[in-house]
Amino acid sequence: MSNCTRYLGLDVHAETITAAIAEGRGRIRSIGKFPNRPEAVRKLIEKLGGGRNLRVCYEAGPTGYALYWQLTKLGVDCEVIAPSLIPKKAGDKVKTDRRDAEKLAQSYQAGDLTPVWVPTPEHEALRDLVRQRAAAKADESRAKHRLAKHLLRRGLREPEESGAWTHPWWRWVQSLQFEHEAQQVALADCIAEVLHMGERLARLDKAIDRLVETAPPHMRAVIEALQALRGVAKLTAVTIVTEIGTFKRFRRPTEMMGYTGFVPSEYSSGGRESKGRLTRAGNAHLRHVLGEAAWHARHRP
Image (cartoon, rainbow, N blue to C red):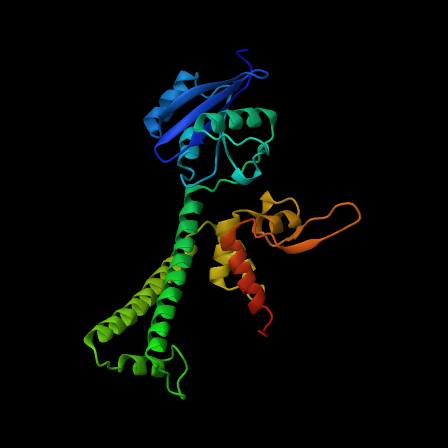
């Protein structure tokens, strides 16, 4: 039994980790709950005799990959599991941390779990920056909508010779005067928020350009190659590279499309074949930029 591989399942939360281990055939035992702290994780691995003949898994989630990197530094074989692909029994309606850990250990031993690709710390850092830029763009859109609706409620229309968000339009908006001071303060705040969001986007764009120049050569090569496609500019190329990581993780193009969620749903049975809307069961950030690129690719260069 000393040479038998042990499979450790971890149900990870922000403050606690619940562990269960599968040893031998059909032997699943709960180890208990301990704090989600590096010292507690190290003590658990030492209690189990180190990383020899030990394989660990936990679900991908909001806690990220800090636990994965810690375990690999300790010499433990660890995998992060895709939560949506974990087998579940339809009639099982009881969910606890202990049961989740035991199911992970049992399914991991049976080979029924699908691991996700884990980025390097440097790769994840650039991906965080790109996602922060996407969040800033969404905040800017909300700020612009708020300003536009504020003007609409007052019954104000921009001059015919100026389009929305152009320099003449901005001069018109900033020259508006209301009868009540409260409305004037509200308008000033809406304008300041839009300008602040614009400065925030410009700052993040400069940071992305600077960090792409210092990225590893293989990453820069893929970013430059993607920009040769119609509809793909630098930001889209950087988003694709940071979200996918490496194209070698996909054996076929259909696997990549499944990862993005750009495949039709299907409910076919017997002689009836029915396909519906896109599944959208994949990486939302990647799906968004690919959709935008497809719309822009319609136009002439």
